[in-house]
Image (cartoon, rainbow, N blue to C red):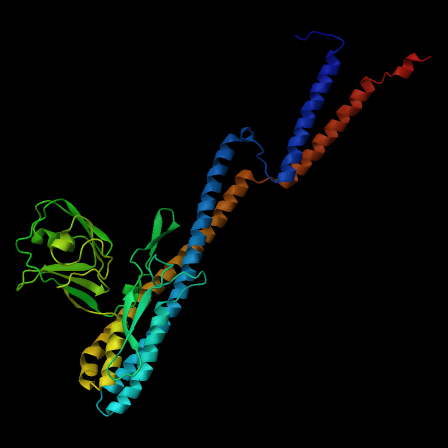
Length: 414
């Protein structure tokens, strides 16, 4: 039931005009923004879906960006590794030539000059930096020079030559998300890429009576291993072998000392994180010393880097030592080449994987954009039709209201 009064028609007309203007303004805003949802109350269910789709699209775009960035890094790194492989192949050719016994000492010394230049080129590749100025083969220590060179006098040479190449990076790996809760580890440790032989450490301290005095933690090649109070050396060996690290431990049958050996070509990285287990066994110095050059004084080491193999070859050429070249040097070079080929294959496989992830993320992004368009984009044809209809209705209402209230002041001036 409505109360009839002189203001009712005017009130109803004004109310209808405000409602029409509101609808007209809403359609105008939709057309201007190209989105049909202006406020959450317009379509709560679609708005909820839209927020989730947009959040997922942001993550997918980040996955694609991460994959493309990784693929560029792998491609850049692979170029230096391939060039290093070519250098090692040339060094091996010279080693085969120098070991055949037909060249005299002067000829071999002349060959040593080329080997020394190839060594410098190999070190240059190992110390390469990317377009951002970050070291490629220094692990996560990207602001440091990956390898430092120590010069010294070498028998047969009148000038100082490279005597030792030491790794200056770390073995940490960057963890990059390339899919939902799926990660790829970017391993740039130079003491793996440029290592030639499996490294072996032979302890010098009798460990048969050793027993852990307290709970401790050691880290071997980045894997942390917990040692319980009362563990003996056999328990320690078992825990190391079961840890998943690329290292095998054993007890020396003669000295009863702890021996460690890598399962592939790499440099061992040993640390006492909590306690002094490895220090007590004589494997490393105190925990203040930084790995990998923190080994105990009595520890014997076997297995070196590609630099060590090339340096040994050059020195043998300078001495005219054909026997050493044909045996130990040639074997170390072959192992270094095989190791580098393996690393190249792994890098290539990782490159293919990130390329596949980038392609998949790009396709998923297109599918998500379709879903976002379905939930949030405006049907332009329908919006323009509604706009014209509302505008026509508003004009008609204004026209009718003008006819209803056409009395003016002039009506009373007679």
